[in-house]
Amino acid sequence: MEVHADVDGSGVPLAVLLKRELCNQKVERPDILFGEANKSKKGEDFTLLLPRCHRTTGEGGGSGGGENAGGGDDDDTISVFAIFDGHNGSLAAIYTRENLINNVLAAIPPNLTSEEWTAALPRALVAGFVKTDKDFQTKGTTVTFVIIDGWVVTVASVGDSRCILESAEGSVYFLSADHRLDANEEEVERVTASGGEVGRINIAGGAGIGPLRCWPGGLCLSRSIGDIDVGEFIVPVPHVKQVKLSNAGGRLVIASDGVWDALCFQEALNYIRGLPAEAAANRIVKEAVTSKGLRDDTTCIVVDILPPEKLSPPLKRPGKGVIKTLFRRRPSDEMSEDQMDRGCLEPDVVEEIYEEGSAMLARRLNINYPSGNMFKLHDCAVCQLEMKPGEGTSVHGNMPKHSRVDPWGGPFLCSSCQLKKEAMEGKLHSRTE
Image 1 (cartoon, rainbow, N blue to C red):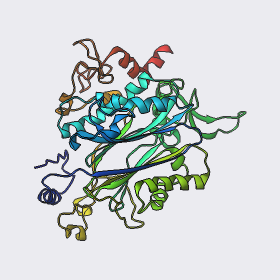
Image 2: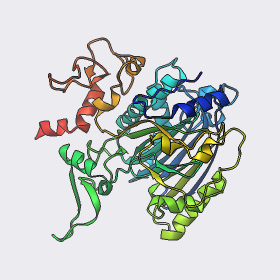
Image 3: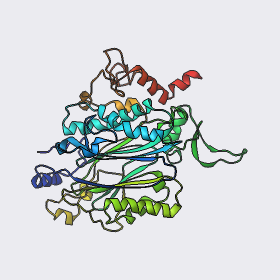
Image 4: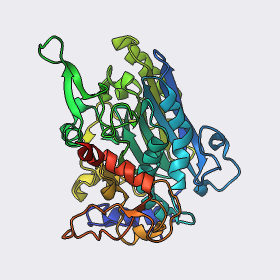
């Protein structure tokens, strides 16, 4: 019997779980269909398309072999789709495309069950993003990184590319965060507290014009991979959201800011209703360019997560798209009467498993018992360097003594990753003042 963990008891109703168990003793994995489209202005947008990628490094990571990871157990493969929108050149986007997936997979301990692997993934994504940034700090790139494992979708994002999910019944969920300074007051406060300056371009003493920017450098974003020339307060720590779809499936739209600056989410979804994934991606790019002209690289990936052997996109009722900010709805909201009458067909429920957007590594790398015990205590939590007991620095080392967190306990960082952490938190800046 499949066990569905629910920390606060407010998830899926018992009646729904019983229906699932009666209908499917073994939940089948979905079919994944995808399409991609791009119109290039600067040549700085890159994509990663791995419909079948092994869970371990060296067996399908990077931009190579994962697309042809055939012949193995489907339960040992995941799907990976990503957009990298470079700025000030394409070097950071290319490097991240080639290395991020391996850095993420290397941060996941071996020999985990499927449930343990899902639980370990959010921390591994944080570690992989920070390691990639640490290894390559020139120029910069946004990243929207999507991992599909069965019916579980995990999205990690820095920057202003976005990922939205439309469920089979037409409900819409935002799975990424917007790290534009204009759109995120909390990030403005974090950047200024870490030593950065935030403001608009000021011409000849007049009123500021244009979007909010970080200075020095003038970047409009608060998070990215790279951008060391702007400042360490531009951090690579991703917002991570993890959800589980019902077996009715859904559709993901992953797109760079060239799309979202031209189309709102509902326009994009209306244009592609009923189209297969490849045609849908092309239609979104075409409509974005028609609307605003080709002002920026404009890239879109559409991914359909479908019940096995259902090789066409699910039909959705026109105009039913509603933004969902609260994933766990009341049981009375989760199934209509007519859905209850469908017997074994699951209701249109998207369960939130995890969401965290803090930029603080101490918060993002610390995992409560028992999940935290999956990770090796004396390996660096970011770069996986094996250290002897006593060599590493706890991520909680700067916590006050009265804190409930033990400053002498793990996770631990090696010396170079500890310097990276201090720089991101503005501590190196404050020491030089």
